[in-house]
Image (cartoon, rainbow, N blue to C red; front, side, top):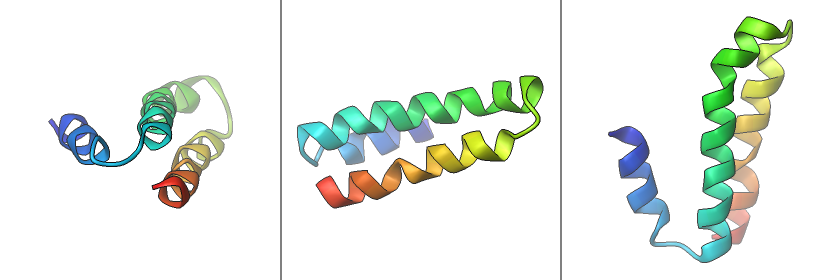
Length: 59
């Protein structure tokens, strides 16, 4: 439900921001696998949080 609510909010922005939001969702979905299969899950979480900076700039 939270992903759907966030997608509704991002739909009010421009197309590049909407497309970059899919990258952010994919990186957030990969985080549990980073915890299981790598020794640096913080890198995956950090990369997921870094997606919001270009999104804010483009919006």
